[in-house]
Every structure is written in C-alpha cells, then in structure tokens.
Image (cartoon, rainbow, N blue to C red; front, side):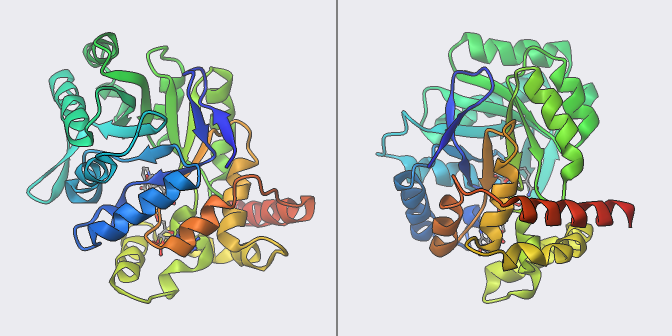
Length: 307
Ligand SMILES: NC(=O)c1ccc[n+]([C@@H]2O[C@H](COP(=O)([O-])OP(=O)(O)OC[C@H]3O[C@@H](n4cnc5c(N)ncnc54)[C@H](OP(=O)(O)O)[C@@H]3O)[C@@H](O)[C@H]2O)c1
C-alpha cells in the first residue's frame, strides 16, 4: 500500500480507503464478516476508514466502533460525518452548531475514540456553512476532539465555496471515471491546500455492470439503489466495459488506478462486502494505466459528455 499526504493536515493516508458504509454497515450483513473485512483492510495497510452518523441506517458508525474495540487505532484516520442523522428510518439533516457538535461528540463515543482524526459535514448547502457553525467546528478542534475538518459534497458550487474557507482542511467529492468534470474542481481544492478524498471511487460498481451481477440479497440492494437513485450512472457505467478488458489489471483496479492517477487525490474510498473484492481493490495501489488505456477512457468520457 502506498501513502499520500492529506493536504496540509499533516496526515498521511493510504491510497485506498475503506468505506464503512452501504451494505457493509447494514444489520443484515453479519458483523463477523464486517469485522473480518476491517481486519483484512488494516493488515493490507489501509488507514482511512470512512463512515458517517447516518450511514447504513445509523448502524455503520457504531459497528465500526465495535469492530475497532481492542484494536490499536492510533495509526488510523477514522473519518466520520455530521449534519445528517437517522430518525425513524429516514435520513434527516441538521447543520445547526448544536446538532453538529452533539453529533461529533456522539461519534467519538460510539467509535471509542478520544480524538476524531477527521470530521466532515455531510452534504451541507452553502447556506448551512454559517459563522456559528464554523465557530462550533473550530471549538471542537480547540477542545482537541477533532483533528481535521472537511466537507463531503457532490455539489461543485458547495466545494468551490469551501475551497475559499480556511476552516476546512479536506473535501470529499464524487470522483471516478464517470466524473471527469470534477477534475478542475479537484485541482482548485488541491491548489488551495485542501486534502482531497475521492468518494464513490468505484462508481458504485457500475463500470463492472454490478446491477446485472446478482448473487444474493446484497447485490439486489446495490442494484436497486443504482436503478432507483443513480440510473444515469448505471447507463454511463455500461460505456466503460473497456476497463474490464485491459491486460494485467482488473476492471475495478483500472477504475481505481484512474482515480489515483490524479495526484491531487489523496485517497480513493471504496466500499465492499466481499473479501476477494477487498484484496483486489487494495492491490490497485501502485498500479498505473497505460497511455493507451487512459486515452481510451478519455475517448469514452468525451463521447458521453457530448452525447
Ligand atoms: N455512494 C455515495 O453516495 C457516497 C457518498 C459519500 C461518501 N461515500 C463514500 O465512498 C465510499 C465508496 O463509494 P462506492 O460508490 O465506491 O462504494 P459503495 O457505494 O460502497 O459500492 C461499491 C460497490 O462496488 C462493489 N465492488 C467493490 N469492489 C468490487 C470489486 N473489486 N469487484 C466488483 N465489485 C466491487 C461492491 O460490491 P461488493 O460488496 O460485492 O464488493 C458495491 O456494490 C462509500 O463506502 C462511502 O464511504 C459514498
């Protein structure tokens, strides 16, 4: 596993991060399997574990805390999110200073940490980023409860706004082969000294036609999520079959190598519930795409954008 600097945070992070989210965090996925994946990720050199208060119906963050209990987490960059929470099965938003502070304090408790290496706001609007909220976040830092602050958003206007705010050290954007349009935004963030995390680095598996590979209830869940909420990505992913036909590199590895070819990205965060997939994804660190493969990807991206 190779490591990169996370902007100016002073943190070094593994090129591949572990998404403690989605089906991994669901109660339907047995905790013993979830724990084994975390063990395997740590053994493979992963330091970034990305979760959130509202992930997996609210079960992902406490699960990560239980799984890490008794393990030495001092070298890990545990990243959680605030501003969203689960109430009666629904994800709700509250970016008030009091709610975000309480959420961070709760995250520390359930994760079993004294200091949270990274706290990110989970999808705020620009209007949510009030002086009061920023003061509250700085208060968490001043109390030594949080080391670095970030914003996770898939709205480029929000990220551009955050790039201009010195309070935030990190941004997490959706970046993968289906999102080349994020590249100027990522370059601006890095130039401003922000650490950049690529969320959805595997494009939710859509470049591997994940929706058509159903071998169990978890695959049905991912397929339904894709078809209901990310139909355009499912369609776009079908254009990138070329990733799965490259010599010497698997399709998911090629998708991750594309993300990591961008030196402004510190870490590609991927989610998986299968050990073989985890091993495959971890092995993507250090792999590079040939110039021909990159050119073929660019051609597909261009064709898609002009379609
Ligand atoms: N998606 C979002 O809206 C969002 C938002 C904010 C942050 N994030 C962060 O970004 C992380 C990664 O997002 P993501 O979209 O890549 O992951 P994801 O939503 O967790 O989905 C990954 C999909 O790819 C499959 N997959 C993983 N490795 C594979 C492999 N080697 N071969 C074939 N299929 C593979 C997984 O299936 P298997 O379980 O079968 O491997 C799963 O269906 C999340 O976990 C979260 O931490 C995501």
